[in-house]
Length: 588
Image (cartoon, rainbow, N blue to C red; front, side, top):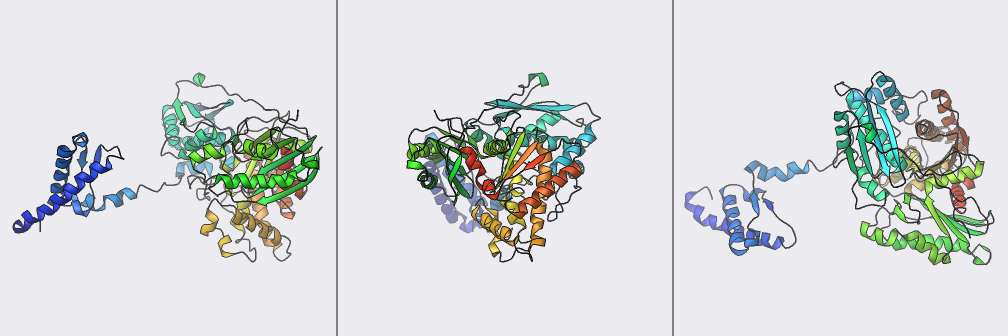
C-alpha cells in the first residue's frame, strides 16, 4: 500500500505512529542503557515506511528529549534488514582450535606404544621433539617471561624464520608451551621477545577472541587479582625480560597430636582423624560440586569433619590440614577453586574466598589451620611415603591432580593445575566441558575417572546405563557423580573373568597416556620418582596401568633419566593425600 499513490498518505500515518512509539521507547530505554547509536533491523523497517518511522523517532527525541538528541540512527539495505540478525548469529559460536597442515606435519606423531582404545593419540612430547629437530638449524629464538607474585617462569624456543613457510608451527607450539607453563605455575601476564611476526601472532592468541582467551580470563582469578586483566607485552630485547625465579616452600611433616584433615575432590570429601600419626578414622563422602549455594558446600565439609572430630579422644583438635583443587593462598583463602564452578563471582568473593578459615573456626575455634592445593598435597604425601625428593605426585581421581617436591622435599610455589595441560596433539582429540570446548587433548579427559568412563562402553562394560555411554549429554557436563559411578562399574568389570580381557584395555590406554605425559612433564620437572594415588589406579587395573607407563618410558625415551614408580595399598591411594594434609599445620 505504501507503493500505491492512492493509499500512501493514509498508510504513512501508520509508520508515523510507530515512529512516535519508537522515539518515546528509546527515551525510556535510555534511563537504563547508555545509548549513542541505534541500529534498526527487521522486516517492519523495510522500504519507504521505515524511513518515515526513523525520521519521526528522531523528531520525538529532538523536541521532547533534547538530552538524547545526540543518538544516531543506523539502518541497512532491505536484505540486511531482513536477515542481518541471522548473519550476525553466525559469529556467535567460538570455533575450536584448528591445527593447520604445516603445523600438523611436525606436531602430530604416532607413538611406538599405541593406546589400544585411542589409535589417534598423538603425544605432545613426541610432536615437540620432532619440531625441535626440524628447527635446530635456525638461529632465531622466541623468549618469554610469565611473571607471578611469587616468581617468574622463563623459556626460550627455537623458531623458524619469519619468512619460512612453516613459521605457523613455531607460533602454534609457542602458544602451547606457554599454556602449559601457565597452568604449571600461574601467571599475571606474558612478556615476549623475538621475531616481530611471531610475537604479534602469540600476543593475538593470548588476547580477547584468541585461541587462549580462556587462559587470559582464568589467570587473574588464579592469581587472586580478578579485577586486573592478563596483560601481554612485547619488548625489544631478551635482556628486557623479567628473570626466571621461584620461591620453594617448606611444608609441615609432623603428625604429632590430635589432627583432622580433609581432601576436597570433585566427586567426594575425604576426611581423616589422626592421633600421633595413627589413623583413627577415614571416610569418603560424595558431594555435588555443581551446587551454586556456598552454604551447601560449607555445611557438607563441616558435617564430614564433625564426624571425624568425634573419633578423636575427647573430641580435642590440635590442628586441621586440608587440600583442595585450585589456588589456595598462604592465608588459606580459596583464591581460585573450581570446586565451586556455579557460584556467582560476587557470591564467591563473599562466601567462598574465606570458606576454609570459617570451617576451621566453626569446627575447632582458633587451632592452627593449613590448606594447600590438592596437587601439592599429592607430592607431600609421596615425599612422606618414600622419604625422597625430586618426586612428582599424581592423583588420578575426578581429574588429574599433580604436585612436585624438589630434591629437598619442598614445594616450588607452583599451582600445578595439570588437568588443563594438553597431552594430545591429535587434531580430532576430545574436548572438555571446563573450557567450553576451547581446547582439545587436555589431561582432564585422559588421566582421571573420565578416561575410564570415556571408554567404558567401547570396552564392553556390562550393565552400563545408557546415559553412562560417552557422548550422551549427561557425560558432557562438569558434573562428576556419573563418572564416579561409571568408574565403579569399570572396576567391578575388572573382577569378572569374562569381561577383564576387554576392560583391561581401558587401563592399558590410560597407561599409555600416563607414560607419555610423564615424559612431557620431565621437560619442566626434575623427576626421579612418581607416586600414583587416587581412585582410578585402585585394584588390578592400576597395576596394569603402571606397567604400561613404564613400558612407554623404556621403549620411547631411553635418553631420559630413569623414573621409579611408587604406589600404595588401595586405602592409601584413596585417602593418602588426606593423611598427608594432617601434617600441614604447625602445632605450637
